[in-house]
Image 1 (cartoon, helix red, strand yellow):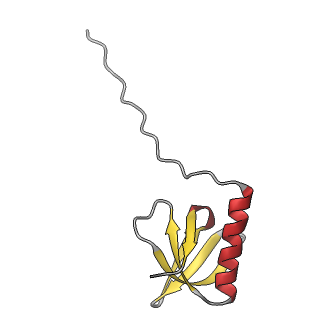
Image 2: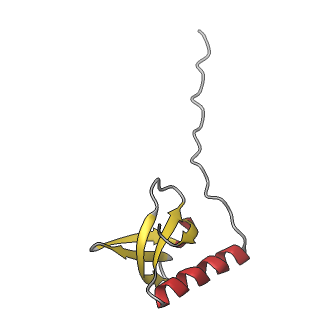
Image 3: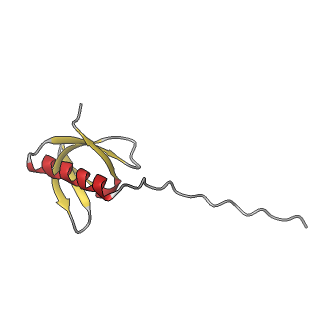
Length: 88
């Protein structure tokens, strides 16, 4: 009887790691945008499209950033945010 090959394990792509300084800088940018009610564009790991809108809330308990645009609230995990910029 021939040997049966085991299926290979498929690994999910891991989020890039960032140091404490990068995370603190990101938190400062988000806080400033929230306080000044500036519209931002967030590049989020694992999402194909950029998330644009105004930051309404930053929930420290769930580590979600609530972004509001056109009557819709999108909740983005803080650690998945790769970059904050101004929308074009």
